[in-house]
Image (cartoon, rainbow, N blue to C red; front, side, top):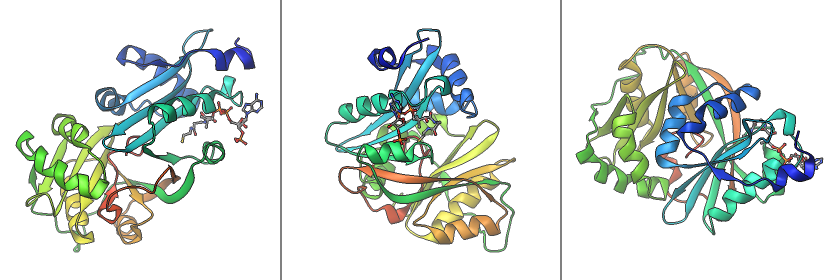
Length: 282
Ligand SMILES: CC(C)(COP(=O)(O)OP(=O)(O)OC[C@H]1O[C@@H](n2cnc3c(N)ncnc32)[C@H](O)[C@@H]1OP(=O)(O)O)[C@@H](O)C(=O)NCCC(=O)NCCS
């Protein structure tokens, strides 16, 4: 077994789809579900990194997603419990922070990760609450007149998104056209857009970007009614009205995390960003 000193001397390397079995084994060690579909999205749009365990498998992982011109998201930080508290988490975080250069970096921290991130200069700016369950049909939940997104819509959506998110998510949005089970846009995209994608038997609804609460609710309702089974929404603490609506529609709180930032404040007009694509990638 690696000692405390040798563990942090081990190199950080890029991960590929070939590492997926080892990634799933590592995350299962911390009680996380496989999330294989999300990993496929991240292999397409993000930079996953890891440190190999000399005894086999992976000792730790982290994912960096860069958005031009100056924002990056960090997610999926996991260190095997057998190697915990030996500085590997700090090493992985330092590696991706250096790659991010001077960009503003955002992440969504579990209670376990937060103290380390605070020591590394991150500050809490928001909360993110995960709601899951079956969204009941209600009188106030009129589906939006949203149409399916095609590749031809991506440029207009990316332009609207750059203003709301504050950085260029065009690569992720383009990927969602084929990756998402359903991806819808209202009017000329300034009014809103949202996607829905499957993960471990749940339909994740994200991103949800909209010019108003009514538009956000309409988009979510359209997507929820487009399939069956439980849905998941990760709602920013900036949107308590949407959170209350989700609970009144039958969703339950599953998890709460802290949105943290290093560097400048989160860019864009976050009042329009109701849900991320995924908490791991922003
Ligand atoms: C969060 C997580 C990645 C941290 O990984 P880690 O390798 O244990 O982190 P580090 O060892 O670098 O730092 C953790 C603590 O150990 C301490 N530490 C570091 N090296 C140490 C050493 N040689 N001896 C004793 N303590 C040490 C650090 O000071 C730090 O203390 P703090 O939490 O009070 O700030 C890990 O706990 C984990 O995988 N948790 C489950 C998944 C999760 O919640 N991930 C975070 C998602 S946001």
